[in-house]
Image 1 (cartoon, rainbow, N blue to C red):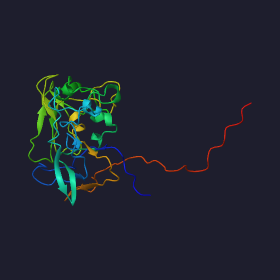
Image 2 (image 1 turned 45 degrees about the vertical axis):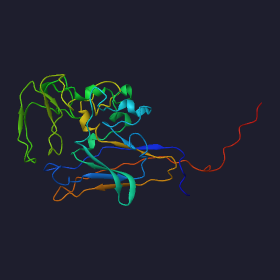
Image 3 (image 1 turned 90 degrees about the vertical axis):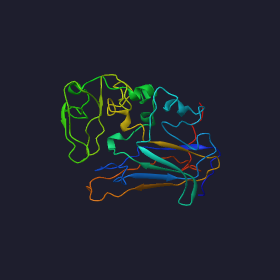
Image 4 (image 1 turned 180 degrees about the horizontal axis):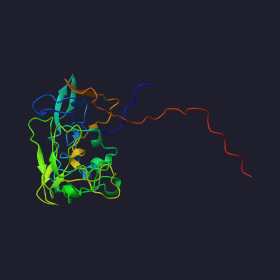
Amino acid sequence: PPAATIDFGFDMCFFDFDTGPQESDPASVEPNLGERFTTCGLDVETSYGGYYHHGKKPDSSMLVSQFLCDDTDAATIDTSAYMDIQTGSFGGGTNCIRVEALKEGIGGDNPRLFSEVMMGFGAFGGAGTCADYDVCPSYSCESDPWTCGGNVPCMTCGPIDYPDYASEADVTYPTGTILSGYPRSPGRMPDVIECPSAGATLTGAGVYPATEGVEERLQLRPYRYTMPKFVCVTYPEGTAEFSVTYRVGPNPGGDPGYGRAFLFAGTGLATSCVGPPPSPPPPSP
């Protein structure tokens, strides 16, 4: 059937832009297995240019703006280290956006609910406030309560070895060190923040709270592993169809066991009933 024209503007959101294992600074070369996303036909007449994310809110009248963090809030979630965002004309399209992933990530970073990338959802999964994004954890490396799903704490005292990341010297964390983050597979791009003290303010050091409503897999995991890596776009009234181009960069010399995943979901409404009509109700007594 022909595409149906939608009589109002609508948004689509795309999540977890990251790269595969890196052996060097991804800013200096094309990232291995780097994700790049392009879509055109945005509603650039909106006050926010047709796209939004943490650090760049849509209109205040839109409910989602209450759960994004920019420079009007107690703390900004800066996405510039995670995504390079360009707008303009690409591939013959106009009013386009192109998002290129900049930072190494793993499957465990992926949100499973929209609320998990939002601040202030409370019991719906995105517990915390914008200010919490920059607040160091309250536990030290020898008392780390989170075990990465196993029996060994993720954040341990002692040496951390980065054998595959030539420019990063191995580090040793003495007992009592407050850490945000942990060495994680494949472990080539270290993303561990050493805090001066529990509860200190340090950019990006905050972690998901261990409270009801936050999935256990996210509890005490740094917000920065998940929250800054999504973009929402607005298509204008009268849109009948749109296209998305998803590209994954090469992985020269890399382990063939690594890859990227892209999930896209939506709904469709049938134009007519499927199957026989329902049986009539029994007659009244």
